[in-house]
Image (spheres, rainbow, N blue to C red):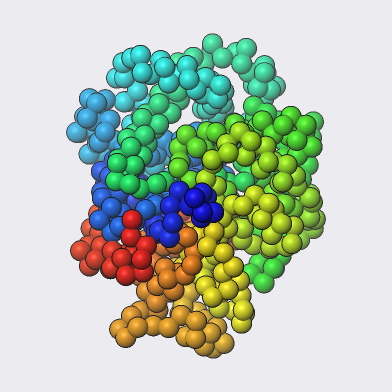
Amino acid sequence: MNNCEKNFGFIHKAGILMPISSLPSPYGIGTFGKGAFDFIDLLDECKQTCWQVLPLNPTSYGDSPYQSPASIAGNPYFIDPDLLKAQKLLTAEELADLKVTETNIDYGRLFNTRYPMLRTAHARFVPGEDYAEFCRANAGWLEDYALFMALKVHYGYRQWTLWEPEHRDCQSARTHADEFEAEMGFWKWVQYEFMKQWKAVCDYAHKKGISIIGDMPIYVAHDSMDVWRAPEQFLLDENYNPTVVAGCPPDAYSVDGQLWGNPIYNWERMEQEGFTWWIDRVEKSFALYDLLRIDHFRGFAGYYTIPYGEATAKNGKWNEAPGKALFGAIRKVFPDAKIIAEDLGFITEDVRELLADTDFPGMKVLQFGFYDEDSEYLPRMFETDNCIVYASTHDSDCTRSWYASLDEDALARFKRECGRKKGQSPTYATIECAMVSRANLAVIAMQDYMELTNEQGRMNVPSRAEGNWAWRVSCRYATKKLRDAIREMTVTTGRAK
């Protein structure tokens, strides 16, 4: 088995980036229902090997899956109402009230309508042995998750650091759990339904020979079950507020840098404990996915911290992280784990050393490649097959808009490096440039195959606080023309499964 096959489980294949939230659905957001199964059929018909999804955890204020109230839980919005109706937990009349015509996701409306629907379904649910077994098997995290969410509801969704002292402390809150038993039952059932429906999706994908690429954000949100139940794993003060927070320094794209606001790990303590917190998190991730993309990989070599309370990311500093020790510990427990490193951003020699030490496949984004003569993101500069190539990502411009914004030098470089066939659009020329590269896996965002502009399909603008994560396709997106174009590109570039 060569190096590429070891790290991916296949050689020279293709996949599509399509978030669950972006799938077609009459209920305002993509779910684990018909839209997911139809998309797997599309992947199969188009000879794809992988489906890359964004994080599946719940969203909160800001709607970002990278700022979740529970990093190891599943997003309740992805539970499909039609599947609940099939279980006789909802009626057709109740579903009719949930249907919307808007294409983009309205998270405010979802919050106000989806949870009442789930509570109606839960009230009709009759627990069986499979539910009891799920609760037993997941008790290590499920009890705390259910208690955290029950307390969230009790306190009107206020941040946990503002709760009463007996609930602010997780150990103390556990002694009061009986008071919230009924509410906790609802949140346990939500996770049961999520996992049951997601497993059915994964099983169908595997029958079609398709692997799921998941995503694990490096950081967790401060207002989360993760920090509440294990505050000692983070750098917090006596009031549980962060002493420093995460972000990125100023650069050419952002004069103030990026102030993410996540608390920073207590790496010294984590290492002393054998990184058990991380091993547990990785284990739960591989219960959901076949391959795991670890977000912001450079943060495991060196990470940027900003004093808590700063208005921008300007006054931060770099710190050394124990990445080699961490991934060494993870490899001992999961020797065959298929992990992809998102080695993007401000890349220094320590990041390159960590990537080489782990042997994880890194990422190559073509949009980064046309601003320097010999950029490492140009396919002719790829030094290894052991990487994953993208035309664009969920954080970047749609390729059609990106191409339209190129200056004269970058456009000339694009024409030299990425020649277009007669009648081929710039977007499809970029896609083909990725697909013919030596990278072992090429993943193309569905927006690019659909040739959407930023106005039509941009998923996330990292420096923008609002208006992200809302893109969704219509129910009629999978035209014969689109399917034929994806399949032809995949077959002619030798990446068909």
